[in-house]
Image (cartoon, rainbow, N blue to C red; front, side, top):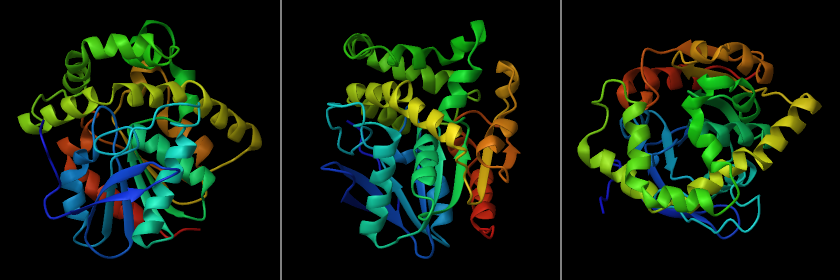
Length: 296
């Protein structure tokens, strides 16, 4: 097993929602910024960006519930891995650390948690940063025809409990490696020890990762639809940074995000999906510019 941490950061196990405790890296001083990781990764994906931000901010970097060294509760109900529950995890750990309001930056799965946190707890989230993902409802809506094959794993993990877990566990290393390779066009983003850390961590967490994705095809989708029907929007400063994969699937990411956040800024980036590791200087600059915007 590979043990990997962010240099210069302290580590704690902090209570989230219910009985789940999260593994949290903490560094720096100042206004708090929370960084949430994506799939198939852990908090370590933020190692470069976190160290840069910690020169000016208090940086809080957890493993999401079900990932890395955080607790992986059995999915005894649809809500166990709903983004609403995972958002409460984040609000609780920040409060435990000593802050009531914070900027929240998420990549991929972490961004979905961030959006739900900002919708459910707008008084807590001062700024919301989103890396390379669409809201849950819009993700499903833009997947059509053979081009949707790029998201084949979403459909696999949306199936009823049992078969997806057994299928993935049978070839876990190959399964998780395939995404690290396919979404890293340069092929040089991950040092071998980091790549193996992601594979090992995710291979030990198959049931909880599948539960996270299954929630996205069920309870999370229901929440997004209810919010859209109610006209809910994100009122805090929102920034989106994304690669150009929208053109492949025939949608305008900026337009989709502005249905949820009319004032959202949008920044394309010449990088692959793992941009925080491929282009950490650009991502850190994007975050610092966002958190300096004055809330309306």
